[in-house]
Every structure is written in C-alpha cells, then in structure tokens.
Length: 587
Figure (cartoon, rainbow, N blue to C red):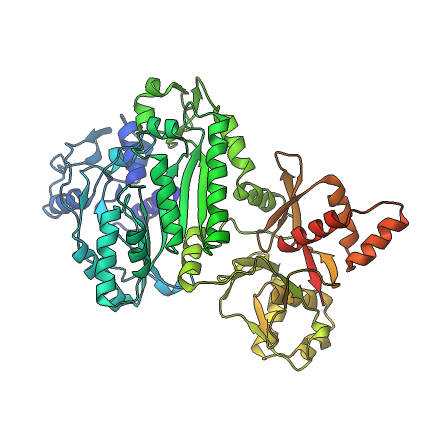
C-alpha cells in the first residue's frame, strides 16, 4: 500500500499529462468500505478507488474520462472525492468472467528470482462458500462464476506458445474438484507436458481415481484450506467440511503422489488449546505420512494465529462468535486486522504464543534480528513455489544422509570450481548472498570475499590457485560454499548415514534461537534452515566439537573428567545434530 501511494504521488508530481490515478483490489476495497467515511488523505495523491471487481468499472471510468466529463457519479463501484468529500457510487454485482488470455508483455520475466517461469491463471472468480473468517465474498463482489474448462486449457496452451512456460499456478479462490478432473482430462488427452497447482476444498466427490488422473495431468501440489481438524470448530467456521472427508482426501491425494499444502489457523473464537494442538498434531502426522509412507517429501503446511479481519462474518457479527472487538487507535486507520477479546477458549496472546512455538519462521526472525554471524534476507524465495518445483523435478532429498565436508587440501589441486547452475547471487550491502534453488541453501560472505571469489571464477581457477592465495578467509568461504552445493567441483560429494569414525565439527552458522515448550534449547542452521532441540547437558557437550574431533575422542575426554557416557544417547545426539547440520563431518 505504501509503495502504491508513493508511486501515485510521484506520478502526480512528475507526469502532468496523467489525468486520473485509480487504485483497486481487495485490500483497498475493504479500506474504502469500512474506513473512508468522509475525507481521507489518500485523495491528495489518487483520484478514485475501484471497489470490488474492476473489469466493468474500469471500462466505464475510461469512457467517462475520454468524454471529458468530470462527473464520475455514473461509474459503478467507484469511490471518489469531490468538493472535499468522499462519494461511493452505486454497486453492481459482476456476473461475467474475463476469459481473455493474460498479457505479460512488458514484465521482465527473465529477471524474476525463480529457477523456472511460473505464470498465474484462473478458471473461476469468487468463492461458493462463505467461511466466517474470510473477506473474499464481501470485498471481491459478484457471484461465483466459472470459465469453461476448454477455454482454461486453451489459455494455458496460448501462454505456453508465447512465453514458453509449462508451469501454471491457479489462483482461483477455490478450484472445484470436479473442474480439476475436467482439466486433467483435457491435458491428458492432448499429450502436452504441463505442470500446475491450485487450491481446493475437501469434498466427498474426490476419489483415488480422480487424484490419479489429476497427477497424470501434471498436478504437483494441491492446497487445502484445512483451518481446523476439529468438527466443532469447522462447523463454527461455516466451512461445510467434514473431518472424514479430510482424512480420505489427504490419504488419497498423497497416495496418488500429489503433495499437499495445508492451511490452518490457531485460536479461532472459542477454540481451546487442546483443539489447536489436535490440529497441529494432525498436520505433523500428515507431513510424516507423506514423506515416510508415500515417498512424497514435498508436502507442507502454513499457519498462523486467527486474525479478526474487517469485513469477515466474525467482524460483522462478533456476538455470534463470543468476541468483543477492541477499538483501533487513530494511528491504525490502514489496519484491517483488529484486536479482540474472546469470552472462551484461547486468548489472542495465547494463540500467538502457541503459533510461534510451532513455527520455524518465528525462530528464523529471531536469527535475522539478532545474528552477529550471518544476516539472512527475510525471504529469498516463496516457499510454496519452490516446493512445487521440487515436486515437478522430483528433487531427491538426502535427509537421512549426511554430506561429508571436504577441506580444499584434501582435493586434487588440479580440480576446478564453478558456480552451480542453480545458484543465484544477490548483493545486499555488506554481504553477497548465495542461494541454491534446488537445495534451498543460503549462505552469505562479505562483498570483499565475493569480489575475490568472482575474479577466481572468471579465471576458471583450480584448487591449487585458490590455496596459493594464502587467504584463509577466502579458503574457508569456498569450503562452505562447496559443502552447501552453492559451488561445484569435479569430485562427486560423499554422503554417509553415520559418522563412521570421521572427525566432527560444530557448524559456525548455528544459532540458539529459543526454548521449546519442553524447555529444550532450539538450535538452527542458518544455511540450511534445519533445526534440532537439545537439553542443557547436550548443549554443553557440543562445545567439545568447536574444533574437529572424533566421537571416540569425545568419549575419552568425558571419561578423563570422570563423566559416565551413555553410548545410545551420545550416538543419538550426534546423529540428530548431523541431520540438522549442527555438526558437520570433515574429511
């Protein structure tokens, strides 16, 4: 919003030929609906807001401006300023769907920070369900309407011909299961190699046969609005979903080879802690089942605490849901999510705390804010998209194996190094960030080290040339970049299941990011984003690995200090820390 208004201000100042600046979309529609009763300072920089669906209002607005008529009262769904007051014109409900082929000309598609082009398409507008927490029905406007699937497939083919994309992201609010099956029939009959993903609802009509057909057509992720795994809460949310549908759909989807992404929330009004934990446990079980039983490691989940949003049914009828809405301050006029007090169940703060305890982004933010070793960007990639691409390319994860870290001195001096084809580099002062789109590893070096490395890479350098530099910081950085797959060399990487007598060393890019609910110390690898939790004694024990050491040498030290060691527990600590990249094997 700030960027949009800033751009509008610059246009007003620098482009006097521009007659009219208008905004549109879900967010600004809700602001205009609920917050703009009289005058608003936005209208110093914009002339109007097109509320709800914009196709017909935009056409009528252009007609009025082209005719030279300053009276915009005839333009439907328009919020505009006149004489220091705000006027909202008559509202119309759009009944048609725009089925023109999207035009992405002018977009620098090759510069997007993604390893493969993904284009958005839709097959329907609006949603046929009105969930209690959702604002889409009110802010989008119009009835639920859909495009013939034959036209949807035609649009995909046209985009493929024009832009070369074969991966499509369906942005429907709800892509009906029956229509997904129809699309699968079109794609399968054509013999085209397309890949796609979309969001749908749990349904009794989705079957094993349907999911198999959808997978064959290139569907590589289905996003489900789970919201809760408790029938009482689902009914209160007006989800029109049954838990037995959830069980059956998820099982059949995963067994067809299609990863799932489960959206849910914690703390919907009256939800208890036990109900929230039940949903968390269910989603954890789904991810484990997906990976360990179905061989589908790409399933994910996304959640946060419930937010009471202006325009939702809970906002419009708080008494029905047992909540009291707290007034906003004068400085929160652009805030659409409001604080509330719930009469029963989790409080707002309890819901936030419970969400944070189970959310890796909470720990990542702690690292970003408090790191003195490596600064991580807030988001180098959109997680759900990279998981989809992994699913498309069937990326093989080696989570059960540990990569052996090699010292440059152990490699053939004549070997070359080069930047991996799936590694991108972004310069953000004072660091250079390396990101690999296959492994999702991120690593940062100083820009000075990066400049030295860049010159060596341009010269097609050998290991011996690097070592001849006598630059320990550069050498260590290259070893780390090789270890995380950001640089490549002629030698294939070694992976082992156990430490097998190797030396172990604690990674220099590990941060303690908090305590788990059981009181364990949570450790995070900043490069791989893997985590593990250890007790206080194990945490102290890890200090022995600050320098390369074997597990047998650790036992000897403990024995010398008169400390008894439990062989099973020591092995478990080492194995868990290896899998989380807290401990590295060195050759």
